[in-house]
Length: 325
Image 1: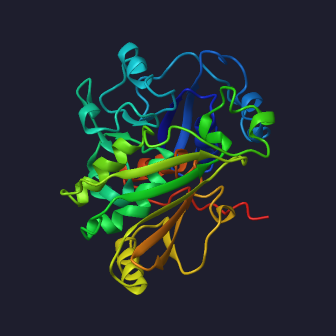
Image 2: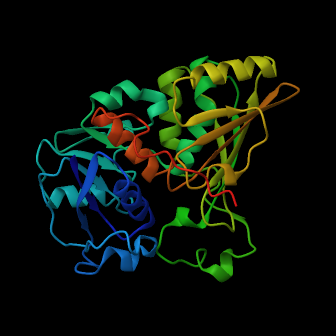
C-alpha cells in the first residue's frame, strides 16, 4: 500500500480525492493537511464522509509519504513547497496551475510532467511529479487532440463551454452565492481564460505548426458539477472520417469514449469519463465533450495519474457510476 498525503484538505477537490482514496485498493491516507481545520474531523467539513472516516485534519506533515497531492489555490503550490521539504522519493501531483506550462515545469530540482494521460501516458509513467490539467483544459483538449494528431487544425477553433458552480471552489464571491447562481447563466473571462495556455501547448505537441486562434467563451451554469463543451472548426472530410479518426486516437483510453448518440451531462457526473460526440455541418465539424469538472477535470484524473506513476492499472479505484437519476 502506498502512503498518501493531501495538502489543502478542505476544498472540493480534496474532498473528492479523499472519497476516491478510501475506496482505492492500493493506497491509504496518511494525513490530510489543513491549518484552518487542524483538529477537526474531516467528516465535519466533507459531510458525505460521515460514517466512512474518523480521521482529523492536521497542521503537520509527514515528509516521507509516497505521494503528495497539492489541492491549493492557484499560485500557492510553489509557496507551500518553498516552506516544506519532502523526501526525494515523494512523488507530487499538483492540482493547481503552478507547473502546467513548459516555462514553469522545473521547480526545486523537480520536473513536473503535464498529466493528461490521453496525450502523454508514457511520459507520465516515467515521471516523478505531475501537473494535473485544468478542468476546462481537459474537456477542450480531449475534443481537439485527434484533429491535432492528424494535423487538421488548419483554421480557428470556436469553443463554448459551461461549468458548474463547484468549478469556482468553496470560497464565496458575488457570483457563487446561491441567489446569484440559481436560475442564472453568465460568461466570464471571454477569450482570455487561463487554461488557453496549456491547451495551446498540448496541441503543439501533436501539431507543431498550429498557429490559429482558440476562440474560447467560458460560461457559468446554474448546476453544481460538470462541464459541457462544444467546439467547431473547419473540416473537409466526412463524418465517418472524423469518427474513425477519433475512435483510433482513443482506442486504448480507458475513460474517453466516442458516442454515436447525442450526449448530456448526467452521463458523466460522478465519473472519470469523458464522452465525445461528433456532428458535421457543411464544412464544419462540431465536437461535443463532457466531463465531471471535479473528477476527470481534477481529482479523478489525479488518481488516474497516481495509478500510472506507481504502475497500477490506470482505472484502479475509478470504476464509478454516473448519478443518472
